[in-house]
Length: 111
Length: 114
Image (cartoon, rainbow over the protein chains, first blue to last red):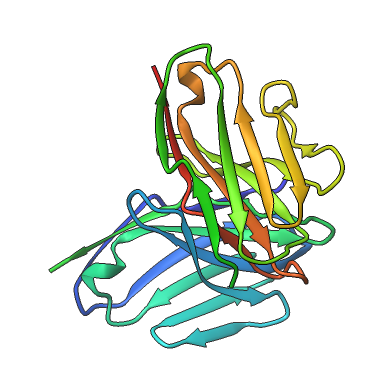
């Protein structure tokens, strides 16, 4: 079945850039997503990218997609302490209505 | 984006009892889903809530354990039946945009079973 993998933990200093990586196996993925989950909260959709795009930028967020390698990354510029959270990568394949999620990457931002 | 209200936000329940979780959306949506997030884990799809018909369950989830209702296009409930400590999780309601391009989530229900 479909599989999405992420590293578990990333620690950065405030003001630095953060890069969170994700790999997936479904070659039919149409959309790929990044969600943010803060403690005790639901999931907030940060951004998403259609599979025929290589890059998408939205303010401090840059998503890069390498479809050949099935690799997705999220770059957060000028990382702030408020960015500390768990970031989930997710994908939706052709013909599927729900998403498949990765295990989440815990981002810790140190002052 | 849709505004999703999920109730209760948390509950502590006794083994063997049942809990019904409600999900209310501020607009009509076609696609509604229920996910489970076990402690420290990722999200797993439980089922797709279909309006006017039986929910579509994923492998490993059954209607007797997780009955779902979807009486209209803005509301759904998920019941966790005959609970055991292994059911302790966050349960999340999710809705899709009309083109199902984006999926939004409620704030979740934190369930602890003693």
